[in-house]
Image 1 (tube, helix red, strand yellow):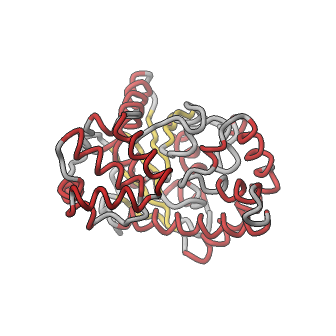
Image 2 (cartoon, helix red, strand yellow):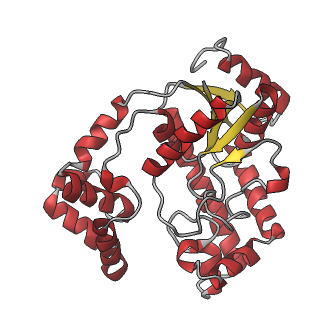
Image 3 (cartoon, helix red, strand yellow):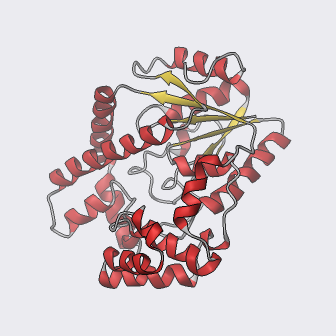
Amino acid sequence: MVLTVVGPTASGKSELAMRIAEHVDGEIVSADSMQIYRGMDIGTAKIPADERRVPHFGLDILDPGMPYSAALFQDYARACFANISARGKTPILAGGTGFYVRAAIDGYDFAPGEQSGNPVRERYAALADAQGAETVWEVLRQRDPASADVIHPHNVKRAIRALEMLEIDGASYAERARRLSNIPQVVDARIVYLHVDADVLHDRIDARVDAMFEAGLVEEVRGLCERGFREACTARGAIGYKEVAAAFDGDCTLAEAREAIKTASRRYAKRQRSWWRRDARAHVVDATDADFERILEEALHFFAGEGEVRP
């Protein structure tokens, strides 16, 4: 069985996963779409190597900006599960990227266009860079109105994905999205979701961002830009990096960048909460008080099959 720990940013997933691993002789597979990148450490809240009390997989596997996808993570994670289990250890999946978690344990049958790098994606990404996200969405609206209806005009990544599906697979994003809720689980796994009251979570996020600046986030972003990874730092999903890069460009002050990171992180946490609220498999454990001895006990109780889903 894969013991799975999910929850919003700053909820304590990493600490709980390590405590579980220590208790069950396990090893952790990280399901975080940004922590896969080498050198993006402080801004992604990646556990430093010397603080990882158990083996971790899924960290530092690519240079910043290199293409990756849930489809690639699915293959990677399942290979990790098999390897960990074959050595008599317990695989633990932990992370905040909900789609990566579901790709790892559910029966998503990814089409070839969802793998990294393809000319269709590159063509529409270039169009978005040159003419803006809404231009790509308008192309989609003309060719697949049903899919355009369920994709926001500013969501360029999803619009490009819909065009990939249309051109490569002859499939409609809208129709496939409708079927996603019925995808079965194919990996034996149980899911614990860490709930933290919103006010407390916001305070934790603010404190975490302040700590990132004190730990050298500005220097980390500057170093990445100097090494040729500026595009990765300014990517839409690079919370903490794009805001600091904007300050380098004079678009805001570093103080304003800090506040923007806090706001973006809170919004991201809200999306994470919404994602897992829809998944009835996730057993909710209240982590508001950060009492990890109790949290660990409750999680282990559920993983042992002694707890109910959605108490």
